[in-house]
Length: 64
Image 1: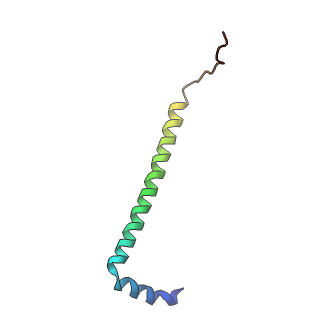
Image 2 (image 1 turned 45 degrees about the vertical axis):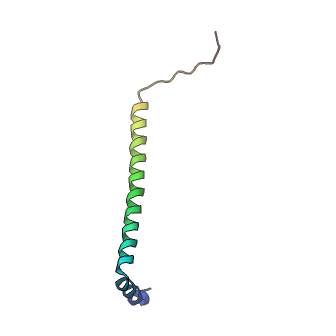
Image 3 (image 1 turned 180 degrees about the horizontal axis):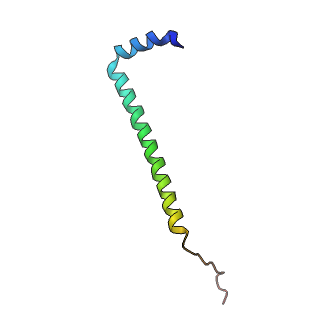
């Protein structure tokens, strides 16, 4: 694995703009995924807190 390290470093240094763009895209993608997980978690927490003290009564239609 480490025998390819000189080739990788040479490629990164040769194409710095491409390497920076790739790193930026990976960083933005990870940020978006983490933001979505955070939003989902907060929504589920809010739903559980507000739904825990509410009662839902279901009756059959046209029972009278």
